[in-house]
Amino acid sequence: MRAVVLALLVAVAIAAPQYGYPTPAPPTPTPTPGYTYQEPEQTYLAPGTRAEDSKEDSAEEPEAPVESVPILKDERVNNEDGSYTVDVETGNGIELAEAGTLSSNGTAIKTGQYSYTAPDGSVIEVKFVADENGFQAESDALPVAPEFPHEIPEFVLRQIEFAAEEDARAAAEAEAALKAAETPTNLYGQPQ
Image 1 (cartoon, one colour):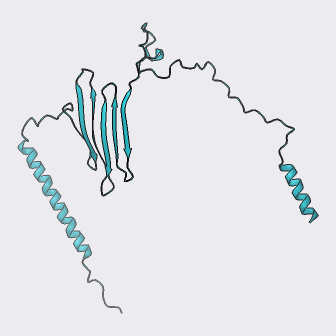
Image 2: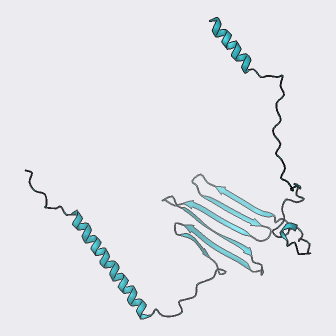
């Protein structure tokens, strides 16, 4: 018993903090040669306005920082069933209204619209739906593919018909092979 108590006292004495020695300082990283860090004067500048972004040959001064755009409206509602709505409007005319729900099969469905002012001053409005069929946008500003410029030549129509016949023939052969594989064989004889 005395040995157990003595062993416990020795273990506690060894585990106790040693106040006689100072805690070593963490190592300081060595600086990269040729690099001196400078605290930025401003945290955000619009792209292309920093001095290092401009070409070295250019004698032009960088543009003045762009003013920040105020957020006039930012309303977000998240419902317990997973549906949500977002309504955002900024001071420069950007507007976004979006609503999202889950369909019965668990697919996310998003609908909404956004608008902004193009560089030429015209207002661009886009309505969209994003569902199991992908993102589908509607707008007068989106390009529309031109109508097919000419009729399909006869030899192309014949080739399409020939390919359809080949596909039908291959499907019939595959179905016949499947039926043959399902039919029981009569090759088994009686046990001897």
